[in-house]
Amino acid sequence: MTWSRPQITIGDERRMLENMLDRNRSELVNTLRGMSEDDARRRLVASMTTPIGLLKHAAVAQRIWFQQVLAGLPESECDGGTTPGDASFLVADDETVADVIAEFDRGSDRARAIAAEFDLDDIRTHPRLGEVSLRFIYLFLIEDFARHAGHGDILREQIEHP
Image (cartoon, rainbow, N blue to C red; front, side, top):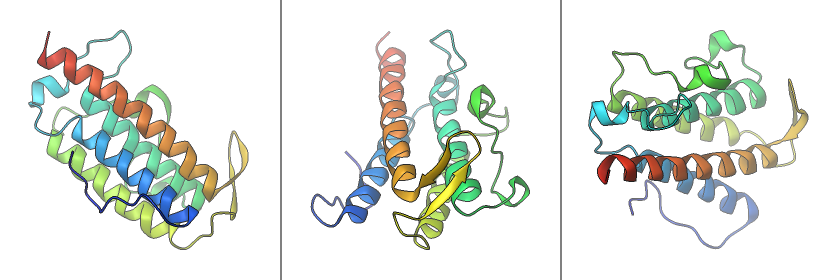
């Protein structure tokens, strides 16, 4: 298992939440790392889900939650698209696995920097959910990225062991 940051298993609540989110970020990236461009784009399920699409979707989710919701930035000031739903799984033909990993990593770095300016109990308004705290955003993305890393693991297993 490759960790982009040291594993933290004890500490205060914020440190634990941040570490768990980083752990799930790493696991999600690792489901794609080393995969060929063709395999990364293979659709093995009825939905638009592909290994590369999962990471693209996660990059969009980070922009929505940290840049738009938490920081209050308009979409024009975000680092790429913030369209939720199926469109967030779409990867341009000229985007490579390395490009999407780099996009996700840049988004993770920016999310960390934005979150550092807020307390866990700071409240922002999500357009559909209403009031949310940074704590909720961390918990939501921990769950979301863990679920998608699991999807990625299954897709990779299907690709590598048909």
